[in-house]
Image 1 (cartoon, one colour):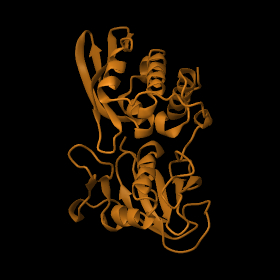
Image 2 (spheres, rainbow, N blue to C red; image 1 turned 180 degrees about the vertical axis):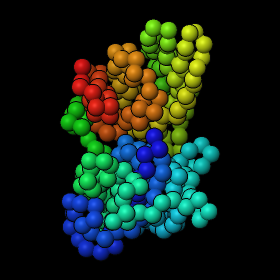
Image 3 (tube, rainbow, N blue to C red; image 1 turned 90 degrees about the horizontal axis):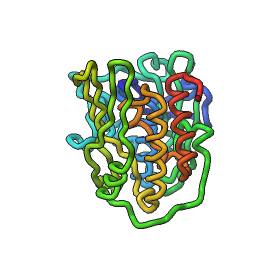
Image 4 (cartoon, rainbow, N blue to C red; image 1 turned 60 degrees about the vertical axis):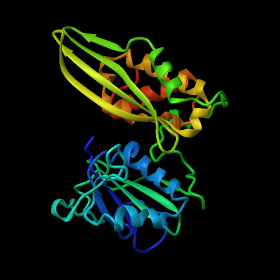
Length: 294
C-alpha cells in the first residue's frame, strides 16, 4: 500500500474547484497508503481530533513536516507518524506537479472543507469529493469515497460496552478462516485485541500462506476496526465479523491482509445488519480489484 498522496492547503481563491490545478495550493508528499481509506480517513480523524481547527491540522501536517511524510498515521513505535528529513526528503508536489502522487487532499481552512482529487492514471486531476467540517470538527460525510452500499442507516443495537476481551471472544467464536487451492492454502489467525488511547479497539491478525504444506509467507497487520461509538453496539460488531467470515470464505483471493486492514465499515457506514455488511465488503472488493460483484 505504498500508493503516494499529497497533503495540501489552498493559498488563495475561494470556492470548490473541479480540477486539482484550478486553485493555488501548497503541500507535502506522503509516501504510504495515500488511498481515501487510509490517508483520507486519517485526515478526517485529524480534523475531528483538532475540534475543527483546520489551521492546527495544516501546521502539524504541512508546516511542521516541510520535507513530507513516510506515514503520518500513528503506530505503536511512532505515535505521531514518521516525518521525512531533509536528507531523505519527499518528492515535490504542487498544482502542476502531481505526477508523483495518486491522490491530493487539499484543506480550505476558511471554508472548513477538505477536497479530494484523483491524479491516478485516468483520474486526470478531477475532484472526487469534498467533506465539510462543523465548528467542532464533525464531518458532514463519514468518508471521502463512500460507495452506494455504505449509505445505508439501520436502527441502533445498544448493549453493554464492548471490551477488548469480549472482542477477542467474538473473534474466537468465528468459524475457521482457511482457503485451499490445489497444493496451496491460506489461513487467517486472530492474534490479539487491544484498546487504544482514543478508546477504540484494534485487532492484530496474521495471514499465513502454505505451499505444499510448508509456511511460505506470513503477514501481520494491526487493524483499528472498532471506533469508540461502535463499542456501545456489540451486536453490530458481531454482525460485521460474521459477514467478514462469510465473504472471505467465498473467495480465497480475499485473504489479502492489506485489503482486510483497510476495511472500515463501522466508521464509514450506518450499517448494522450482517447482510448489509456483506454487501459493503463485496462492493469494496469488486471496486478495489475491478471485479464484478458475484
